Length: 283
Image (tube, rainbow, N blue to C red; front, side, top):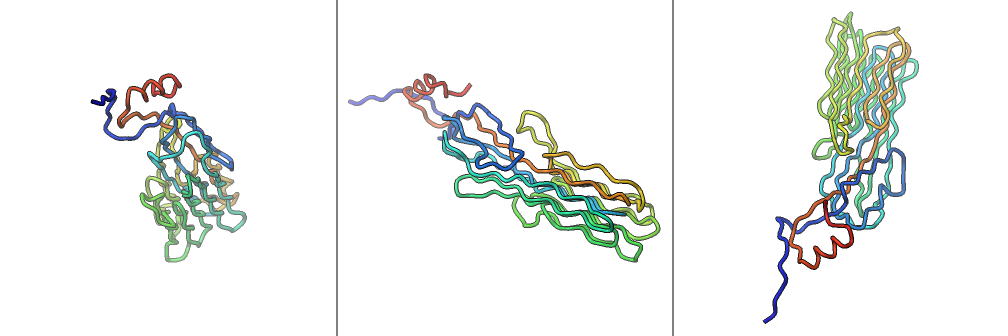
């Protein structure tokens, strides 16, 4: 009678010996990573460039789209597809809106995963731009508020971002906050000169550090004050709304890939022995 060896039984027939290796891409590349011989499963984040803030009583830029992908099956020892890193949008020049952020993307097999650039922050009297997260609307001395841009545009599930806040009219007119990956930007407060608060970002520990991605840009209530701060690179944050000196530039995006260590499924003793010998058995 034939006999078989014993083995190790897990809950799923899925394994990966990627040693939890992390690769961050901050510039365009032909491949995100060449996977290790034992890698079968990865996690990834794709963050687009944030929008630039507008000029003068301006809305803050919207955060770049923020998307996560978990337990993606890949082939071991092969180059994954091309990576595009979106740049941050430029701040608005004299009497102008900011610029929208640029999309980031990442290819696995034949599928392209894209996050949309953040919407631009508006100059006074104008509406914010749509994007991964929407830009804030500009302040106005007319009787109507100027809306913020829509977020999660184009729509994906789960959402990649949120809407920007409206710029408000009145003696204390001010720009709205740019939308963030975790929450919408807030409208400015009419007649009080309180600027729109930026939407919050999303913390993520994929790199081993707790980094927050996709914070919106704060609105502005000053017509003549100087330039505002630029958003940090490789965060996808929106630029601050500006005064007479202009707003801030949006932050560039990033793609991060983590090759996972996972053991499950059914393994014969021969397979266990071969993997231990090759140094690919999980720690």
